[in-house]
Length: 362
Ligand SMILES: NC(=O)c1ccc[n+]([C@@H]2O[C@H](COP(=O)([O-])OP(=O)(O)OC[C@H]3O[C@@H](n4cnc5c(N)ncnc54)[C@H](O)[C@@H]3O)[C@@H](O)[C@H]2O)c1
Ligand SMILES: [Zn+2]
Image (cartoon, rainbow, N blue to C red; front, side):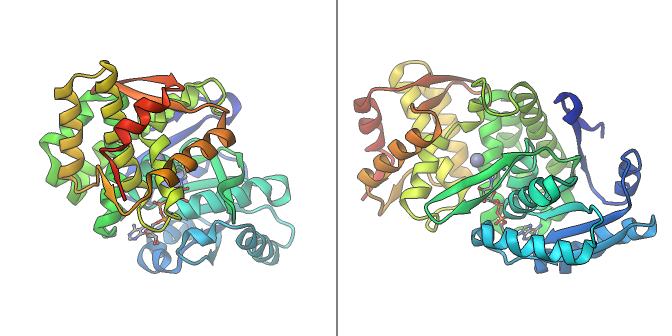
């Protein structure tokens, strides 16, 4: 498959959607660096797939080392970054390593952040292993760690040298992780790819089974959209990248209000997408039938569209905090048909509250 290019002048790079790691050494030959790499991953991922990744690199002369971090959002911390600096420093002996971020979004964000900051920046490669990371977090260079009082508060825009999506790895993902990643995939369909949306509707079971051809097809379509958006707005500064936040204004608030414990990210944004569809239909910009199709697909994936046991007040509070942190105003991504969305700023509080009554129940 032809690689997907992220166009960012001298920081441009390719995303390779493939079914093996065998060609990776070959892809790396065009870069001028010593063949010295450190793979940052989780123990379980290395046990399952480490050999597949590392053997072809070693065969072509790479000196490869590994460091593991625990499987948890808690690993996205400054303490863990410090631990990694120390380990890397011990292994490297003043050489500059190439970092391989081999895992889901947690590993990608953490290893990318360490690559951005260790010795004022070393090269890194994203090798995402979850559906969410393959279609979203590995692309675009947002790297970072959490602080105790907020997620992703410390970080940078730091682009990888390349992204390699091996879709065969997705087969071992737990069901909940697949559904969660699927939520982002549906997001891409709604905001900009009606054909992708229809494809998921028509081939839902194959999509959820992540059959090889199907997985490559959906991952590639999503990566194309993200690559295009990021190419136009690398640093989230022109407003174009906001479109990727469909379902995220409420989704983020729902995650924050429930301490990032009750819902996966994909589940939270599923509720957010259903909510944004309601706002759109209430405002008369989206036909009811289109909204119904979106909500129906989310339900078929067993994603939530409404949640119980959550305080609406807490969610509203989290939303206003997010607004203060991010840009001073809340922005709503509203679908106007499947495949197209617009961005609206500052909707009336009343419109938000009355729509919220259908999605958040205490
Ligand atoms: N940088 C960005 O632009 C961006 C965008 C979206 C999300 N994120 C971040 O991504 C993180 C969430 O990422 P995630 O959903 O990938 O979660 P994750 O990285 O925690 O991975 C989820 C779980 O799946 C396991 N796993 C990974 N690959 C597997 C495989 N192939 N088979 C079986 N199990 C596997 C992991 O070990 C982990 O336990 C959050 O920290 C979020 O903030 C970043
Ligand atoms: Zn997301």
